[in-house]
Length: 173
Image 1 (tube, rainbow, N blue to C red):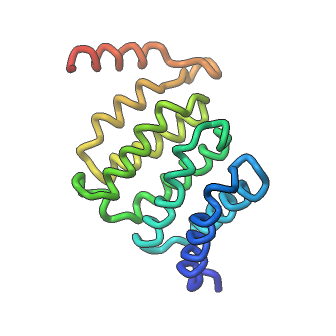
Image 2 (cartoon, one colour):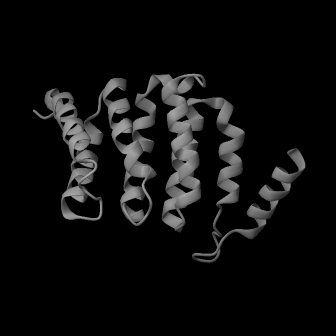
C-alpha cells in the first residue's frame, strides 16, 4: 500500500525541506519530525534515484554543526545512509558526482562526530561504501583500526589497534 507512493512522498518532502531549510532547526520539534519521517521512508526506498534524493536531503543536515543538529540525530541519519548506499549504483564509480559527494560527506563527519556510537556508525557506513567501491577497502580498514574500542573493557579505546594504525599511517605516508 505504501511502496507505490514513496517516490511522490519523497519528492514532496524534498520540496518541503528545501522551502523550510533556513527557518527550521533540527533541534526543534518540527525539524526532528522531518528527520523521523525521512527515517521512516528510508526502508521503503527501492531504486537509485530515490536513494540519491534522500542522500541529497541528508547531506546539508549532516554538515550542520552539533549545536544545530544533535549528534544522536546525526547517528540515526548515518545509519540510514549506510542502508541506502547499496541502492546507489553510481557509488562504484570513483569519478561520479554522487561518489564524490558521499565520500566528501562521510570524510568530513570524522571531524565533527565525537561519541563512540557516532564513530562506530560512521566507520560502519564508510565500510559499506568500501564494499561498493573496493578501492576504499584499505582506507576503511585503517579507519576501523583508528576508531577501535576494546572488547575487554567497556568504553575504552583499543590502544593496541589504534597505535598499530598510526604506525601504519606514518610508515606509508
